[in-house]
Image 1 (cartoon, helix red, strand yellow):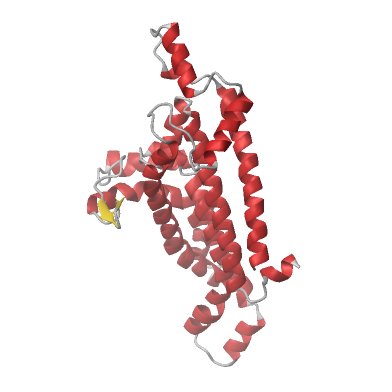
Image 2: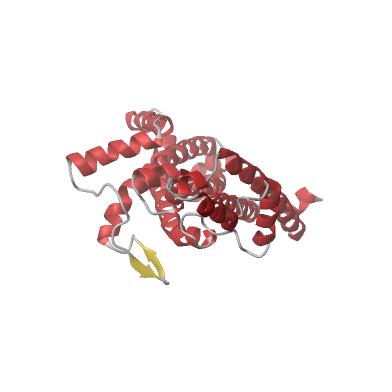
Length: 325
């Protein structure tokens, strides 16, 4: 296990280095942030002074070298637009994104698990077929369209839910969260459901296929022969075995939800990392863009490592140490 973790950490460092190079080069090639951040009425002397202050007068390779040097000291640069450390801006917005992603995944599990289980136990029923048909829409409909339709229905036509913002927050361990206030929950409902819809469809299909496969296994047939109740067979023998791949997928999807919450946060003006990224792209705020992507990659790597370790603990047939020998 320790050899596996060390190897994964070394691979992670290599991934971060390659990603930082690609992102830095890509952002560098997009355009000149000075054209956006400095007023057209500024004098040439002011422009030159700003360019030197931001380090934009250096060639790209030298800018990257300075970035790596500072990153090793946990300094990912200062935002061009706000003149504060980029990491500070991102960490300030991170709780809102993590809250949105957590609520979305909780919705996906609470809704998708029972619906998928029902569809797997009764695949030929009308309800089972309807559930699978609706899951297709969850995969097919684009997120931005779903968000706009939910705003139109619940905020414009019915007027029961707010269309944007985070609402009132309360402190939990010093961190502002929305789910502890009624106004915050109302603001959280639409963006969380928009972000959860794809994962609801995914969990429904995974649970359905896993349930149908488990029902054909010998241990389920043996349990029926022993006269165990259907509730015990489903709760102990079926669910316990299908949860291993489902937990793995849910954990991996949680990283994806954090990374791809950009569209949802933009539509609902949710003050998270995704909206910060869009705002930074609009003004070519390179330090914030690079820092955001590196943090997201780090989250992905960390979550994948936890998933691998959890999988080996949940499934006794998997031994990470053996796979590395």
